[in-house]
Image (cartoon, rainbow, N blue to C red; front, side, top):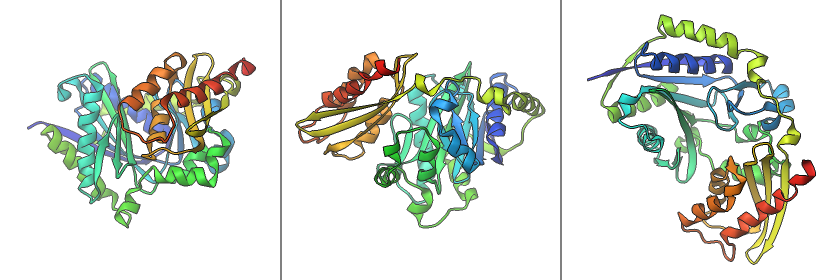
Length: 355
């Protein structure tokens, strides 16, 4: 039976955690380290995707006031908030460990294993495509992965006592999404492990269940370990680059290049409003937030649609919406898929004002 390493790097700054991402991934790619399960935690941090601009994605004034560190990840994706109330888990694997390179197949396998681990704590966790883990329709863990040659880094975040309010205020989003009603709605879409269990679980117990689930899924044993000398050297080199303003602000795009455009659309199903974060240079819809007076069941449909439209080529908008609704049964009382396209297009029609 193969043995993988498990390491716990504890509570660290964002710069240290990101530097460890690079060191561990590079070492696995160079075959200098075994396949590894890592547990980690962050001090309060706003993490940018590698290709993002802090000015466009984050409320930097709020971050300064609240002592939230801004850092840039080595992977793509959107901005996220991370702090001590979440437990991070990461797998650093070789392509041979996986048997394929299809990220959707890999995500399902890893997420289903993680869901079993979380479920062993006493909650009904399950995988939700494309890469989330939920309990009763509420997100408890988000995940994502990236290959570097033959090495994979697959990351997950488990919400234990997560502060949704703070997360919303850290990100650059429309003001109406910070209303009491909007924050309450956001809270309803996520699940904290402590709330589900009725107590705050010991972190060691959570790690133990996750580790056992991954060991069973991959048919391996896990042995405690530390960073190798080569990984430590890689970490020191990465940290020297990453723990700098030059790294964090390597991409600086003005907020005017990614305006939030507002649109409204009246239809038989009601009034639909949309706030659209639009990247004019790339002609991509970065994020959409829907609101208004309409009925949709299941209620989570809107949140799922918002997630599906994240970072969408504007030319593919209608296709994405049609594909989304074709894949699920939704009761909308007179609302049609094309109404969501129409309200976004109404918002985008204002983009010339900002050109």
